[in-house]
Structure formats: structure tokens, C-alpha cells
Image (tube, rainbow, N blue to C red):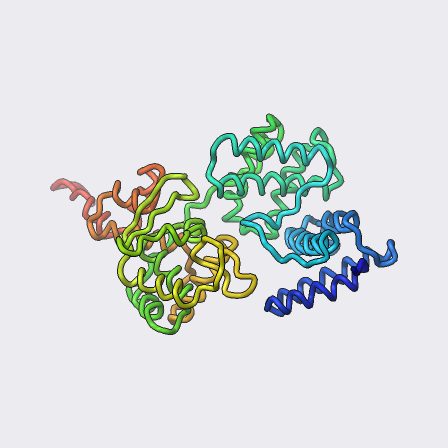
Length: 401
């Protein structure tokens, strides 16, 4: 069995091509292999798990001198593949669930802290998606500390909070940074580091309450026509129609299982990933038909229980929210709707607004959208301007205008 980086790299690329990976993805692997070979020169080009661990920890960009999430992902992914080959003689391309590509810290103190936080969020009984987001935020901060030369929790101070938030701007838009802070704050509270919590508060990251433009009726019609025709693959059409009609969250679309669909009763029943609450929704004939077309005709043969799988090998469950966004974006483009940014958030707003205009009571809309609190539905009141105008009281006679 080969032990040289270059030789293992050849095997990995052959397996990737045999599995029909995209050439762009293979190119990213080859780029990482070249950098790994440079590091391996100190060991005469030989690969070991220890060398791989060192390579995976190289998360600082030499160009900017800052933490790079892309380097962390690419290097960690390659090391996982190389380690599988060294351990078994076979290249394993098996992917885990969302967040599996995240590299864990290396120093013992940070590993223990991350494990303790993982046990805590599990003990709290939080939803899987919430546990994943909380764990990822904690690990990313600990990795940032390691990349900054800090290997003791006591050494972390308020300046590292500002540096960490600054590093996130490489991947997050300023308007979305609030979401990252929301997932990060509980970890700091768990560690009882009030100084770090104070620094996070001083950063003054505020939530942006962005008004989401309504989806025009003409655009909706174009999308439905494309999904019910042959312009869009059955999988993409089914996902888009489900989001458009039911307002399901991306995490629930990803987690949807074959057994969740009642084909005879034309309903689907799930336990929501975000809230842990059960939810049963009716499926219109057009949605059910497109689901059946995908499951019976286009879905790859697999033992994976999820309904929606990757169309390219390996045929695993969809990875994360970004995959759903890419699918809905392609569908809208195929329908000729190119001027509208679309994702499940916009489609949830669209579904809620249509229900509101149809005179559906807010508690019913709240149940359909799977809100844990009916108050969460009040945000959609601002979308229906006609209904809002009807609530305006006339000025008393004689009042100055």
C-alpha cells in the first residue's frame, strides 16, 4: 500500500473520477494534495496521520494572515480521505451529516471543552440542527484561538472575540453576522466567562429585520409551470413546490424521509428539526405527483431513508441549507425568473402571505409553518398591505390633515 503523498493522491483522484465527482471538486482536491506534498517534504514525502493532523490545523491564510474557513474545510476533507486510506487501504468518500466537515481542535484543553459543550447541548434536549449550529460556533472559535497561537482557555481575552468576529466576515455578510453570534453566545455563557460575554456585547452585532419582497404572481405562475413540465428535474421541482406551497424550512426538506409521506392520505408528517414539534401537512395533487415521479423514476437506488438525495455520486442525503438554496435558485432560473433572489425563507414568507390573504387565522398559519410560538407569525402581518390598510381608522371630522 502506498504511503507517499503523491502516490496516495493519484489513488484518491482516480476514486473521485470513478465516483463521477465534478472536475471542479477534483481540482480542489488536487490543489490541497499539492500543498500537502509541500508539507510532507520534511518527511521525504511520506504521509502519516500525524502529518495529516498538522496539515488540517493550517487554517491561517498566508495571503491575509487570517483564519480561513475554506482552508479548514478543504484540508480537513483531504486529511479524512488520506487517513481512511492509510487505515484500511481503501479511499472512503462517505460524508457525514451537516457539520461533519468541521475540523476539531487539537490541544487537549480545547477538545475537552468542546466535548463538554456537546454533552451539555445534548442534555438540554435541543433540536439536532440547533445542537449542530451551537457546536460548530464553539469549535470555530476554539480553532481560531489555536490558529492565533492560543492553546489555553485562560489565555483567551476580549480581543480574541473581536478577532473571531472579524474572521467570520470572510464567509458571512455583515447583515447575517447576528445569526453566528446567536449560536456563539450560549457557549460563552456555558463557560461562565463574563469578560468574553461582555466583549461580545460590546461588538454591538444587531439583527437586521429585512423586509422580504413578495413573490409576484406572474413569477409564481412561471415557477409552477416549469416544475409541472419538463424544464426542471423531478427532484428539484418537488423541493421547490414543497417549499412554495407548505413553507417548510430547508432543514425539514433535507430531513424528510420516505416513511414521512402518506401516499394514500396525501399528507406528510414530520417532527420539525428546529422546534422538535410534530407537524402534519396536506399535500396538493401537483406536489404529491412530482414527489412520486422523483421517488419512482429519478431517485438513485439507496438505503438512505431521506427522500431527497444528491444527483451526483456519492448519492447521499443533501448536506445543508446551501444545497436547498442552490436547487431553488436553479429552478427559478429555469422558469425564467432571474431578477428575484429566492430561498426557503422567501418561500416561507410567500406561503404565509397567501394564507393570510385567504383569510386563514394566524394560529392556523402558525401551525402550518411550524412556529413554536404564535407570536412568530406576526411578522407576516406587515407583508399584507391591503389587510393593513383595512385596519387604519378614519380621522375624526374636523381634524387637521
